[in-house]
Amino acid sequence: MPMARKADSTLDSERCSKKNGHVKIWVTAFFLAVTFLVCPNFAFGSEVAVEGLQPWQAVVAERSLSAVTEKISGSLPDAAKEKIVSAVANKLFSGYKTDSIIFDQNRLTVKLVPAEDIPHWDVEVKIPQIQDPPLKWFNQDVINIHNEILKLIEQLPVSSLSWCDIGLKNEIIRKIGLVLPGWEPSFVIIAGNAKMSMQVSFTPKFPLVLAVDPKLDSSTLPALLVGDLRNDLLEKSAPFIGLPVVWMKKHSADMNMWTNRFLKNKTIVENTVAEPSASFSSAQISKLNVHVDSTMYSLQAWTAVYAGTNDRSAEVGLHLGRRITLSQNKTFELYGEGIFQLQAWDAEYRLGAKFSPLRGFWLGGEWSSKDNQWWAKMSTDVYPHKPYLWIRIRDDGKINTGVGWKINEFLALEVHYDARDNDFWSLRMVGNL
Image (cartoon, rainbow, N blue to C red; front, side, top):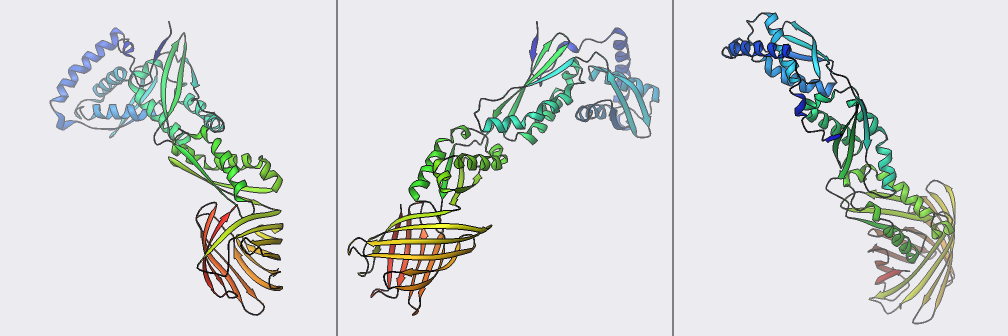
């Protein structure tokens, strides 16, 4: 009946498989050891090198043999030393036997070879219960895990697990940690007829992603449409909850690519020819910041109220623009605006053109129906949680400007100045629609 054992357990049944001849050598070595243990000042303490094993095994074997050589009297003849080392090595390193022992000044070289048939080893990687898209990323990570683990165990005698199981576990954990940080592996060995199988399963380690907070901003799309895109992203964030923070950090680029592809398939983004640009920051409350701007159109609507002036009332504004991309980060826009005073029922219309030599910065001019004159204009794009500035200068030198802070996706607070008003200064609150 097949038996299952964990890779960090010992196989006690293998410890008593030595032949009677080996027992006699061990008894002889024991009495010799009693002799030199009472004279520790004469131990030769050789540097030990073990050949015939994988590097991770050799580290374990060399540590054990070094402890033995520190107790062997340097006055013993080489033949006696060899018998002691051979007996100890054959006893300690189940599954192997000594092929040669070489003393070279202060260096001891022991070569081990398998003492039993090597079974056929197989590795089964069990995928955790996660959904796409992280499932796809996990599968990509474990493609090489199978081969890496198989290389470690394919020439491993079964009984050697009684002494090198911890070393094997640590080496597998080290290799997995390079590919799957944040995932805790566990191992089970299934024994069959002339066949051994190692099953590797994974559980996420703390800290875990508890929530994904998407934040979208746009200088070309209405806030209501951008809000719909944010809600869509929020609904799709469930597969990322409960995943290791450090592993999600490794896959930040994959998260950005997935977000961009997801948004490009949304009708709003398709119809406005918008280009999303995502930036994911992994944490327990992960941030997903996305900038979505149309490459062809600009559509903005707002309401504004004023405080500190009697010259202005609440207003509603609409901006429509057609953009032309000249080169990367260089854009030209023709636009029209309508501004409607709700109290006086006055309307102002503007026609303008502006050029962006740098992303988020605009230079241009516009004609206003209110005073039938041209204004030179400089402005910056408005993004949440950031300051912004705009300034208009008329032919006669009159200035109209505003300096503000975008509080969130929908609201901005602005200090407003207009040289044409009786009350030059006012406080303006702008709500984006």
